[in-house]
Amino acid sequence: MIGKKLGMAGVFSSEGKYVPVTVIQTGPCVVTQIKSEVTDGYNALQLGFEEKRSSRTNKPLKGHFEKSGDKCFSYMREFSVEKPGEYSLGQTITAGLFKIGERVDIAGTVKGRGFSGVIKRHGFHGGRKTHGSKSHRIPGSVGCSAWPSKVIRGKKMPGQYGNTKTTVQNVEIVDIRPDENLVMLKGAVPGSRSGLVALYKR
Amino acid sequence: MDIVQQLERQMMRLDVPRFIPGDTVKVHVKIKEGEKERIQAFQGVVISKKNGMSNATFTVRKVSYSIGVERVFLLHSPVIDKIEVVSRGRVRRSKIYYLRKLRGKSARIKERRF
Image 1 (spheres, each protein chain N blue to C red):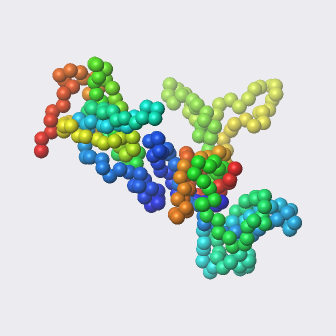
Image 2 (cartoon, rainbow over the protein chains, first blue to last red; image 1 turned 90 degrees about the horizontal axis):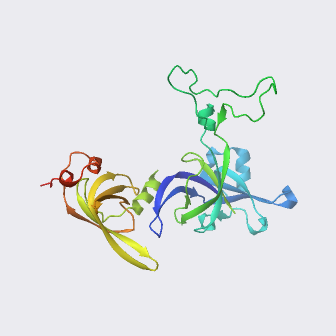
Image 3 (cartoon, each protein chain N blue to C red; image 1 turned 30 degrees about the vertical axis):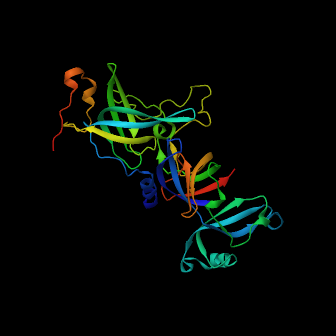
């Protein structure tokens, strides 16, 4: 299911423990396309999330959305299912799909940090700040000498950090509010607030 | 953020009395012993209060058998049965951690009058 990260909060469990949760607005999603083994070579559902005005939709997409109803969506994602025959075009999928206590996988886009150095990106310690040190945040030596006379592959170096799709597995569902389309997951979830996330049933 | 704030509000308790650091409070805590549940009181001076939504906490310090005991409570926790304000104290700062170094007569706090 597609969702949107709203932010983090805390919830008291029945034992009185304080549980940090991430609140996610999930759905309602609408089945916009059903892909089956026969026609597409694999079984999947395409879901649409967050309705938008049809005047804001271009003609090719409008044609695509017309097959499943008169609603247009901002986001679409594909989810693999075993039996696509159980679903019908235009069917609405809500947060009621999940149960409290169930575990899910959640995928989101990590906050982008741009081109970052090794301290931020890989957690290097960095050099001395004072006492004549000129090595503050530089990575230092990257390898050996005459042999092997190259830098070994996979050496941790500065570069792009974040802005990648990341999946967190086995996240517990603490609470569900089907009327408000909210799902609360224990702990943190990749991405910024109002970032798009995808929830997968295990 | 609105929905998140609403959720936090729902978690908050409305029956929390007003008290500030320096006050002496009696916190009635629910304790589970196997199947049974009983209530234990913890009385001491509030030495700090951390504000927040549902995650607001306060620290209570008491000296028990000449050993200082501090407990941090979640203000809105359902574990707390009730909070009683025993007496009001007059202190000049919001975090009275200096109390940890004091003992005996010097660790007294003047009463706050209205």
